[in-house]
Length: 287
Image (tube, rainbow, N blue to C red; front, side, top):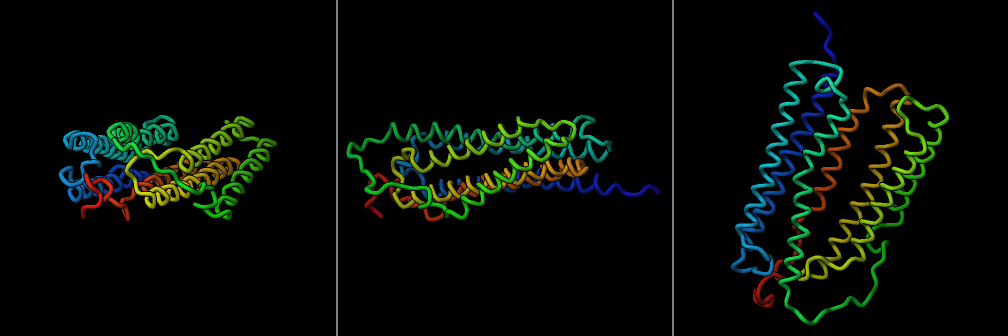
């Protein structure tokens, strides 16, 4: 009787957890939260929350659910194919490429939501008829929303990653890109920094948003960005270290765990707790 391939089994257990988490569990909670908002704060009582007809909102929710269902079914199919026809690589191709393509399929509903959100808030601003503008009397700063220690950890992980790349370059493994990696990780961290800067200093997208809600949103986004930088730098460091140590077989498993972490971090930004929905009434002073 052949010995069980534990690495093979662990690979598909982790992959199945990614399928269920990103394409079933998290979307289910997103839809539940949106549905709770629509049911609790309908257009009849909170018209400023809906710059589009409610049917348009319902259509967007169906599209989001359907896209996640497609990703879920595709994930199940990959598991069935992989288990029924064991091979060293998924679909007899490069497992890392298959995993990356599938992850993009899983996050495509989130990308759609982000694009729809941009259009939604643009319509909300266009419908905003207030002529008197209010301005904040004190400037916002990075450390108003995140501790210097937290930012320092992100910078430390970035520097550690650069030093690791320089070290591995002295004795590179096959496929190591050398200085290109430094450019890539620097571009990644600069992009995250730009997103954080925009979150702090860019004009608010929602013209009705309460000031306290705006501050909480900025804090959540900035902390998520810093945590994402730490996670990304750590992930890349490990993916470089594993092949250098002759443990390339574990890289795909670690990538899947990282994808799941990214999904959870993204989900953190979608919160409705403590939001002041009174500002979306026709007359916010009416309870």
